[in-house]
Length: 187
Image (tube, rainbow, N blue to C red; front, side, top):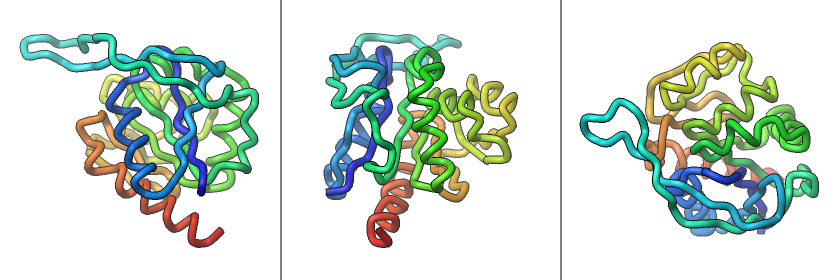
């Protein structure tokens, strides 16, 4: 079974993470939860409530990491998914995560990204010249690192499939899975 990384940390958005996780299982893939350390992480739920101008956050489910970033051998994985929430803001500086991220872009393996997940490939200098969807409040992170913000539910740019928020999951996750299917067939 082909293994696919899902990148998380504390305050990873629950729906951003669980929707692709279960879609991978349905597609015959082995989702592997990767984080700074092999331990349990607290996910969160995000929503902009009516009348609010900022995101409200509640605790969501927790999730167990299968592997620490430092233990990952990138060549063992077919693709990668960068989940959203607040976690990317904190974990993007992990040098093992930077190494892993650069590998998937350099090897043109299927990359999925949603919401704040953009902060990881942006920090790893992988978005220069790339078109991506992300939550509008992360537009600056993308553009300052040389990427182009696209306010659409699904943006396909070569091996990179992205969406703005979990509300777009039905638009972009299927296209990312289709890329994984192509990669699996050709390997």
